[in-house]
Amino acid sequence: MFRSISILPLLVACAPEPTDDTPATPPALVCDDASCVRDGDHRFDDAGSSRRVLAFMPEETAGAPVLFVFHHLGGSPEELLSWMPVDRAVEDGFIVVAPASRGLFGSEWAVTGAPGSNADVKLFDALLDSLIEVQAADPDHVYVTGFSAGGLFTSYLTMHRAERIAATAPFSGGAPEGTYVTPATDLPVMLSWGGSWDSYGGFDFEDATLNLASELVADGHVVQACDHGLGHWLPADAAERTRTFFGTHATTGRVADFAACVRMEP
Image (tube, rainbow, N blue to C red; front, top):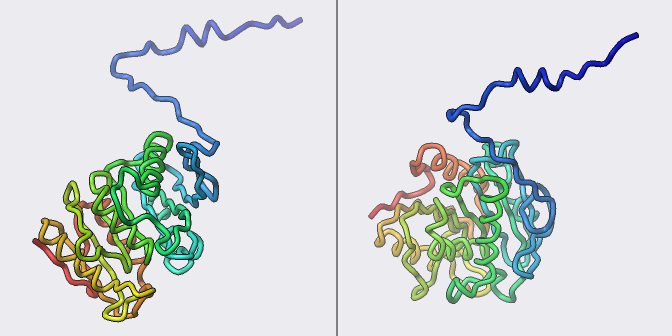
């Protein structure tokens, strides 16, 4: 007849004594509701508002850089990513987040007025706060890109949220004369546009881009000015160039140079 013997006291007795040198392992935060950013297509709720978000998470999110992508007028995250697949930056270890707009008439994203009352800026802040708190994303390596209306919002964030952003890359964005605001900190910016016929709905994207470039350089920022000459569209290497620009900065702190761009410095 066998007698059962509990091995629990033995395991406890053999367990190593904790030392002051043993680092504490914080419990992983788990969030599977609309109050946090998760992998895939989902709703994100903040302060009573709900927005659709498309997110791509790498295998390891702790310490990961973050890339925000803002879509064009009348578009969607999926449509922009089909033209400009920067979601592949997840392969480089980035968390990629592409929110859907509220569909503001004429602008898609709120790109005028003070940031304190801007619902889209509040969304950006809330998404980033969630990524830092829940996914342990790197708050010092946050990047933003977008095209057309999304490029204008990227430019707006460049001016109004520089303290939270490491670098930006607006495509057909800019800031018309009289709308520029000095960013709180220096940051490199890659400005891409389609030449003299980059316009849409009567808006001159070349003029807005060149104005933003000159203002940024005068304020002490490094700018990569990239005129691809294709009008109001994206160059074939938009995604690759953006991944290189952000990836180089995230890993080395340097501003990458490109044959198709002119480096502008203070």
